[in-house]
Length: 455
View 1 (spheres, one colour):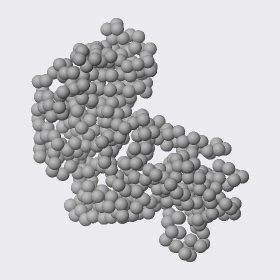
View 2 (cartoon, helix red, strand yellow; view 1 turned 120 degrees about the vertical axis):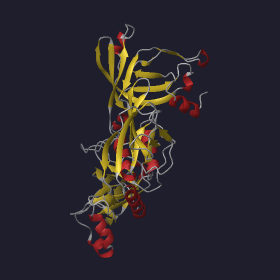
View 3 (cartoon, one colour; view 1 turned 45 degrees about the vertical axis):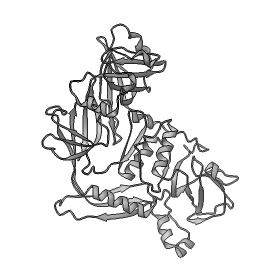
View 4 (cartoon, one colour; view 1 turned 90 degrees about the horizontal axis):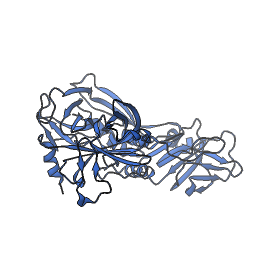
């Protein structure tokens, strides 16, 4: 068995023989191809131990922490054996790539990337080209929450704790209202902000009013659903799409709430969490959801790249983000801000009345940056529901952006650089500086990748 340390040493040696194995699923099964001939040892007893050397290239297949979708391609050599593959239904099925040595057992190969097949793109001169879509595209499939009656659209998706959301009457005769798709832990219906008598149907995400609303009524509700932390929401999304969560995913234990109307996808939910936490997310090489807070790497370096590891003349500055002089972090969203608040609320609890009428609560912070006269003042909207957590995240984000952040890219001969890893690129002008990996994009079959880092 090849250990991780042995694999790393093998990867860092430019003299080693490398082979990429590709497993391409389609509607009728799976085919196995490689860029060099490979046969797994008989001792592994695989159902199909042969990877035919039909893979010309696999380029543009990427892992990114910023949610951007990139398009790549796989080129296959048709020597007459795979012409019938033109009839295969490829689109939407997984593509998996593995890297290793032709002399190794299949079990010793390491996963490089997982992606989604975009289907047959072109064919000519004996070359079949398949489009490849970033694997995270799978999570753009809308979540089926069912439909509200009378063409009311999808049932809203409520996750976690929400201060005040719209509700939808689903039975006029019984005054039954639907809050969300999932069961609730608690619900507090309000009529222009005033709590009203009701019967809760928590398992159905609903309630029934005991009295008929009068003129000028506006029924909303505060609601609490059990997935009320970032980790719990990520796990729910993973479960819905049949995924696992990477063990590398560790997120703050803070109270959050998500409310979505219309068609909602897992990618939208993860994007909202990403914005909330200053994090990144992707599907890793094992098709698991990986989300982590993107912070400064400090002095701890996991990988040092030298001039031998970086292709000559590929290091380039790709973008600069100025520091932040101030941040308004929005939290505690009111999804159903009231035009009119009950007079009793105005009299007895003016702070609550103000909150019921406002969409957001703001946590505002500033920092002195005398060396940066054009530092920016930013606004970030979050799913956070607690003021102390909002202040802590505001201060963390300001500290991260107290300096200029630079995005650099380069091509390396190490195609399996992990996302989020802290790296030093000892190539001028970056010698001695530490960055964090934000994207890895395969350049060609055989072992090069374009890497993006943030300093």
